[in-house]
Length: 204
Image (cartoon, rainbow, N blue to C red; front, side, top):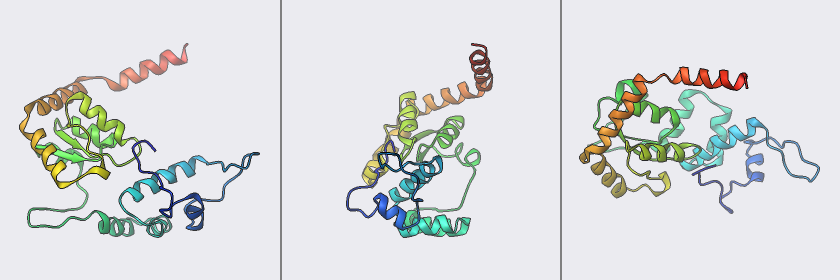
């Protein structure tokens, strides 16, 4: 997966371990004996990679897949992503549209939807990509000037985060670029452009 750590040799997350943990089905084999992945397997592998990045063990990931209730998932995620301190406020889910217009800057994983929400809110960002397509969107935000250079999750430290936040708040060029992107999104006709492209493609 682009930007993901994948599975390192000896970390207990090879294909055989995934099968043993019940995270992947045995699957079909090609004539040469190679395992064939279904679309469902690819989606599940992406989910496994994401949770491995957060520090989940294979047993914990299997528990999430076997018991996908929201409360069970949140309980496990809280064990790996919770933060505590006198100068921190943690809460549950908050809509992007409500939260993002309020702070001076946001730190987020740079998923496609979150990146779009930040741009719509005209708020500059510090992107901290974890896996999948997040490194791509993090680079796009930086290329637009609406975000600092990405800080990959595996390389995240308190010092790097503090430095990035200081720059994105103090240097007003980030805020101006985010505002310009928000204006472009609000006044553009994205759906119309997509419809036109589909019609052109359909008619050769």
